[in-house]
Length: 282
Image (spheres, rainbow, N blue to C red):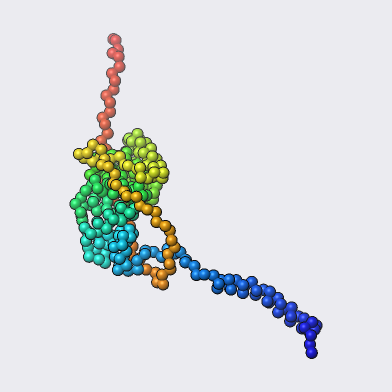
């Protein structure tokens, strides 16, 4: 009978012990993983709705992103019957809950006057709300209205300031350069606009709700009061469950900049007449 400490079995025993030692951590890891409770994995899987029925249901429940999306689709007739009035109502609800794109879309609706009566005052208010929330297209369009006098008194300084701000936030447009070229002979106005842009950028960073563009509407001495904004409660962040199949991306079109500016020539004030010197005696 062979003993375990036999000289012939010693190599096999050593190899077996070595394999067992190496595999023990792996087996323990597998066991610990199997014993773990299921985890809720967070993932950004796109919109909360899977289809149009889900989108309508969520919009009816007051979900702001769904209201914005459905309102946009109703505005253009994208997959749903076109209903501008209903679209505006949904966009207003989404805007009141803080959706910057909804404020921008309302600004376009009231500015263009295609689906609703044109209302430049309301358009400017909506663009202002979107601009406060950091939307560069809205900041650009404030500048466009001010520089091109669309429903407001022309103000090159304030308009150029908003163009500068929108470029800092990522807007791609030649409007700033066009305006600078128009003001090439008025370095003082360009300097004022740059200082005003610094002021606006600081406010947008530290106190965006306090930002108020300097604007005068024809027939009004001062700008109308800002739009009343109800306090939006901060939603608690909870991870989303992974869906079996990713939902279709029912994405709305991105906000667009205003059409190409047509800036009128700047009329410079006449030069002051030369001051006559003392008469020379002959």
